[in-house]
Image: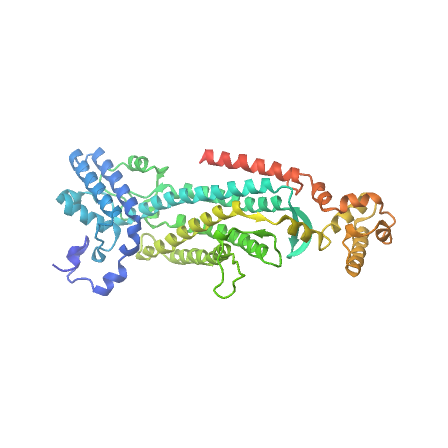
Length: 467
C-alpha cells in the first residue's frame, strides 16, 4: 500500500508522497503536545453528534471509551507517534480506528482538521493562560507583601540613572507591581478572545450535518462559537495577542532584572539575592552571579522574536486556512513556556530579596537627593521657583567643592546663598523628612506606600474573584 493511501486524503493521489516532503510537512513532532486538548475536543464533538442523531449512543460511548484509553497510552508514554500520519489529529484517529474499528472513522463527521486544530490551540492556550495567571498572581502577591514590609526603607530614586530624589524601597517595588497589574489585565482580556470556539466551521464553510455548535461550546467551556466559519479556521489573532502580552510582560520583567543585576553589584550593593537564585564562577571564587534575572533579561528577545514571527506568518495569508499556519505552534509553545518559567522564577525570587538598608540609605545621602526639597522650601518662603532653582544649584556646587551634602552644611553655609533660609530648613533636608513630605496618593511617603499596598492587595483579590 502506498504512503498516500495511508492518509486521510490519499484517495485523490496516484503516487505516494516523497519521503522528505512527508517529513517536511509533518507537524506531529511538535503538535503532539496538543493531544490532551485534541481528545477533549473529540469527546465533546462525539457527544454533540450523538445528541443530534448523527451517532448512536453506543457509537458515542465506544468512541469516548477508545479516546480515554488512548489518552492513558499517551500519558504513560506508550503511544507510537507516526510521521506518515502527519499530525496529532490523524495519529489519534488512526489509533482509535485500530482499537474500535469502523466506528472510529465516524468521529470526523462534520468537522475538518482545520477547525479541529484551531479548537485544540484555543483549548491549549486557555489552559496555559490559567497556569500563567496563577504564577503572575503569585508574583504580584509576593511583591506587594515585600513592598509593605519595606515601606520605610529609604533608597535613592533615579532619573537617567543619576540620583534624583529619595524614595522608599516599598514605593519602588509598587512601581513594578503597577506594571504587572497592567500585564494581568491584558492577559485576562486576551483570554476572553481565546475562549471562542471554531469547531463546527469544518474546512471553511461549515457542514451540511445538523450539528449544534452551542452544545459543543458548552461542553468545552467556550463562551460562544465563532460567528464566521472562514474566520474561525484561519484566525490566529489570539496567538499574536498572547505573544504581544508576553512581549510586554517580558519587557517589564527585563527592566526589573536590569535593576536587580545593578543592585546586586558591589558598586550599588543595595540587595542580596539568596544563593539558590545565583551561580558562581569557574575561575573567580568570590563571584556570585545573578543568573536568574540575567537569563530573564536575555529571554525577552526570544519572546519578541516569536511575536514578529507570528505577525509575519499571518501578514499575507488569504482566507481561509493555509499550510503556513502549521508554523504558528512552535513559536507559540515556546512563548508560553518562556513566560511561565520566567514568572515562576520571579515569583520564587522576589519575596526572597534581602534589602541592604544601610547601603541604600547611604547611597540616598550621596548625590544631593534632597536638592528639590530645598527648592520647595524656598518657594514656600516666597522665593520664585526659578530663583530657588538657582540658589540650590549654587548650594550644590558649594557642596561638591566642600564634599558636603546639603544636610551636612551649617546654617551659615546655606545662608550665604539665601538669607531666606532658616533653622527649620533641616527638617526638609533629612531623607526621612523628604520622603514623608510626599504624603499624597501615589507619593513615596511610607504612609502612602502602606495604603497603596493595601489597595493593591484588595484590587488583586477582586480580580482573582472576577476571574
